[in-house]
Image 1: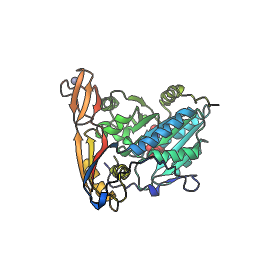
Image 2 (image 1 turned 90 degrees about the horizontal axis):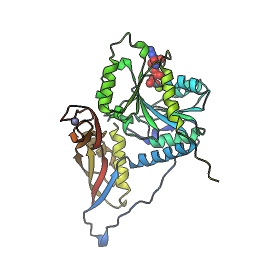
Image 3 (image 1 turned 135 degrees about the horizontal axis):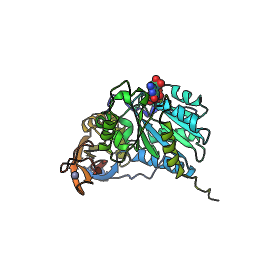
Length: 265
Length: 111
Ligand SMILES: Nc1nc2c(ncn2[C@@H]2O[C@H](COP(=O)(O)OP(=O)(O)O)[C@@H](O)[C@H]2O)c(=O)[nH]1
Ligand SMILES: [Mg+2]
Ligand SMILES: [Zn+2]
């Protein structure tokens, strides 16, 4: 839980955005009028609406736009330092020759990660969340409008480093990918079950360090499958490249089912 | 996860259902046992978020819905209290969540 980080939307900045290009969705709201003859009477109003309905609605639009363009979007989540940016820079380099790769980088401050991605030749846009500890669908929508991912491209979203908050926020992605590095301990799936429950794939990164740290891969996978029996697992090293082919194959398999919708004439 | 955003979400839903002249005196939520919410933290954030809004000072009532899962071993529904629970009958982890992850604004009292 994370009560210390307030989420002032006013502090969110999206690189490359001109003016205040917020998309406002105004839907017909219900208004109840009850002030009959100045007698104000307490009354119950039935609502039955999800707390995150606004986010989910915007996520639906993002997903709709992405699906139409045949873009595979993956939402990478992890604690800070487990290797998301290293993996993405490498992936952009290796896969960028075959298809267009774009990256949305989420961090509280700085554009360091977007700069690292751009050095590989891939396009990237940095979202700074200020005090916010997760990306939401509105921020990703704004970033998508700036990035304009090409049809049939790959879009990676690097979420803010945090194993808790991003779990509940749908961004419109095709899948969440949780990255855990072997220096973090194999018990994390039990300590932060929401994230491992929400993810389709768990990447165990920094496999090159396995000889030096006590990390029980089998145990970790067992723990992850306790909270999510269907989770897939890949072990790799973003640094040495060991196991990366499995990641590229996983992406290619997911992207294979996506094709841009025929433009309606 | 992020209770401040959730509290803002609650206020958004509330504001979508009232007139600015209304005063909301109570908001009832349904928060499933398996959802991503810490009710106490949410209540704390709610109090802060509603300051200066139609719901300033409103009482927050939180109903907890029990966690429910389908056990693939036992072939029946069971009750669980967290995502790391084993099946209370067979002790296995072949569980699929079927209920208890709701985060919903149910109703409110308007004066
Ligand atoms: N040994 C090792 N270090 C890695 C690996 N992947 C990333 N790192 C290092 O871990 C640190 C954090 O990586 P970074 O990509 O910035 O993590 P992020 O915060 O998740 O984006 C950096 O010093 C990386 O060089 C890996 O596979 N093996
Ligand atoms: Mg990073
Ligand atoms: Zn069972």
